[in-house]
Length: 279
Image 1 (spheres, rainbow, N blue to C red):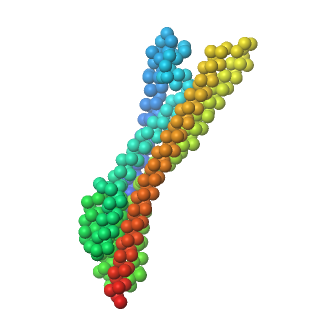
Image 2: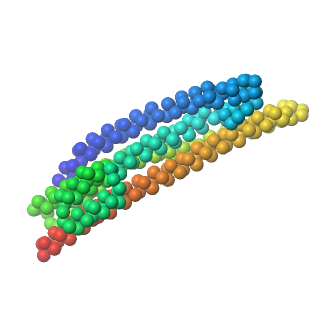
Image 3: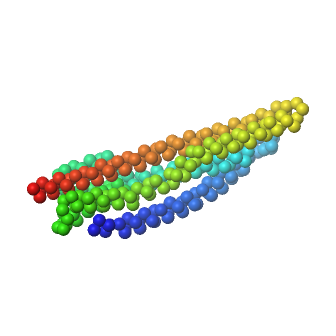
């Protein structure tokens, strides 16, 4: 009986996983196309360079970034990916939290449980909606089933309720962590791509020094500028990735704690009421 509610959440999980995978598959190439178009058409526009020639010296920040070279659109792609996937995670985690404050919802459910009003607690889950409410409602449904169960003792019933809550949690929570891996990966890749751009720029700078009798200050400055631009863009991308990743993991931990806290209350309420009744 503990596995009875599983088919429906499993279907929802598969649909959510498929949607997230499709979103990732589409978002990454779209971010690259947008970044490349921005690099060529916007940053490479002649208005950002002296005489309208992209090969000449830049006149503003857009031209300076364009001088960063071929690594710039790659880092820009990563920066766009951080922004796009962060927005997507905000939406998904927001829906999982439900229509109201999670803390208030947990307190209301615990108050109803302490009063022995399981129906009111279940109704509160219907109002809240979201992943947290779905897990708690599944536990309350199992609570009512165990009240009617006559073949199991109190400890077995309590264990069945706890197992049902754990199963419901395992079906709901992975959806919240999807695409976080991408953001976490960009933390390292952003820095490494910035470093690669820096190395390329410095190689060009030393090549300029090696091939000319007297250092060409303009070429030397251009290559050093290329190195520093890539460094700045790479560090910025990694910094934003770290901030967003920590924000999302904190939100997910808060939801997980709310589920654990309320699930524990459900189990303890059932055990306390039925053990006292048996005595």
